[in-house]
Length: 363
Image 1 (cartoon, rainbow, N blue to C red):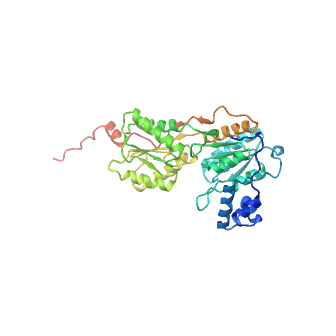
Image 2 (cartoon, one colour):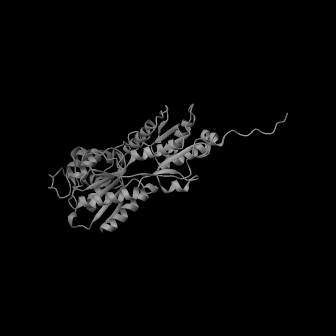
Image 3 (cartoon, one colour):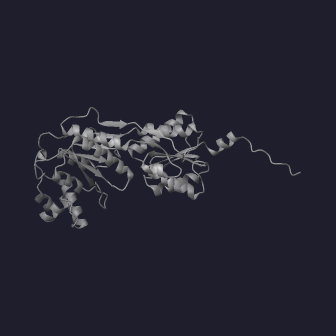
């Protein structure tokens, strides 16, 4: 993998060659490379395919080594509190390191599901010294472009297993799944379901594996249909909870692999007239502000998002100075935060209260 400080790479095709390959003018090809919006979708597709096919790499317009320390934080959205926690951690660590942070959007995807590359070209234009990529779903070509430009980068909570040698920071997701499930088992639950995000996502897979491990260690069988996936979407999680409630043996507790999805679970339970935690216990994952705002407050597994982001920034600074971290994967510990959304299952509470005294005889 090519890193900062490596020898220069061989020159690739010129923009004129790319334009000829795509059947457009050089100014039109330049607009696509620079991420301009005033290009027809079909034209953009042809130019992007030509860029990919020919391996075009944009040259910086200045000597990036003489530029002030600038780090890009590439976020899909700033609307979520998840992104806010990451931004908070990056800003604090960047201030300590004397760096400036640019928050940019990307990588988005085109209509044919191909990843856009405009965000990457903007990185090279402004001469960023390094890049932080939370929840990255990069293509092999995008990894290649970053390496080709010799820009160091660190992934934060990557969606998929990164290529060998790529540095990433995440949470102890497996242990978090174990903690959530053991908490529910300790309350007396055995009918415990799980609603995860994406089937192939690395974090969700580890959390579900932790759930299964905890059940097996306790000698509790996993019931059919108790593992559902909602793609980290609140509305889909609501539908998955309804499906679980329609099973012949519905769960008395559910481990939800993201706090945002837990909000959808709360909504489904309310629609069925079921109370949390009197009739169904709920555990989330993340410990976002929403976990404290909902009623009842959500018991959840805290993953230290701000600390993960700060750790990633510090690793990136070392890489920007030519150092290489000892390992490529750094995991920060998770911990269960108990609040008001979990309690023993209804049958256990009824048994603990004992039989209901008989009323006075009417004979």
